[in-house]
Length: 461
Image 1: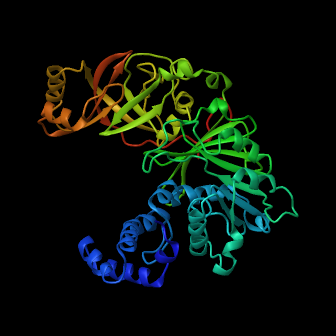
Image 2: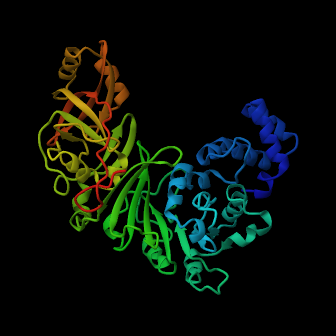
Image 3: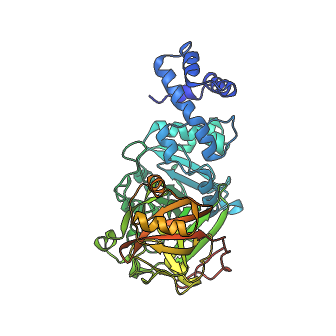
């Protein structure tokens, strides 16, 4: 059972510091704890100790600092890179003085950690344990004094709390909101039903009407056609993943009726962003049509699900050109990779419906795309692929997969590449038929200069 008083006590935290300094193993820790704590408390402390290095890394705090959380709260919380970038979406400085934000479904408080200091943040949740985490963590991350921390949390249903937010005389008044309605059905496992949110997205829309502005975090695969007009939609991630989809409401929606994809580095600095007006034609595609383009791909040994572009909406179909490119995950999730590619090279096309590898006559701009020069292609058969590898003297091989399901490590062992050169091998499809494409990676070429926002050209900074 979660015990906030136990985990935040000086006795426990001093023990953790000492155990960390001495690099005690699990058996040594358990033996030491057994001398002073019950079995239940010992188990709770050891579970918490396993989280300490994880939350320090996730939120970028010093290696002697403590936060209060459990495993699920930590998994659900926004990390520092996304949190620091999102801080730029809020009012700050004199504009933020005296303004309040409701952190609805606040959890351990990750969405409040990096808010501008001038804003007052109040955590709202139905779970007192989560509010205990929020209060303690607010003192660490935002400097809220323990004496006033109770005033910075509300135990209640976020839907009811929101109805009081626009009354300036009410104690529960707030100007803005942030909400993470996505919840996990089983610890460690994302919900499979994108619409199974608590509160529902329809209820989030109603909540938004009680504030001047705000943001809602929803699963990146949520159907964009169900997001109301007048909002701004943001997909945020790194070079290797898409981590959040944000819907901005009211004053926070600086580019209403636009979709934006944003790439950030480990400390939250923006690497690039692309903005386009919403495309009603693309969004109108119904679920039965879209489902044929939803594939479970293996990428370097890890299963990932991408809701990919179709040839009807973004790119034409064609044969193999000189280069093949892999779009950044934020462009895949936002459905923007086709228009970004065409803005740079009008020859860009797909080689098979629904598979998000694009091919073109020249490399596409980084970091939107990772480019590879095509050396040769063949059918996917052991003899044909081995012959292709031998002809290019390939000994070190990286295998990328979409539309073809094999175990990458086992496949490389089976091919037994022997040679002096290295290459990247794509297993994918050409107009639906399986194909192997042998490539060399291309040194990143810089993105073109910034373009105006709109339906025809990207904003790339």
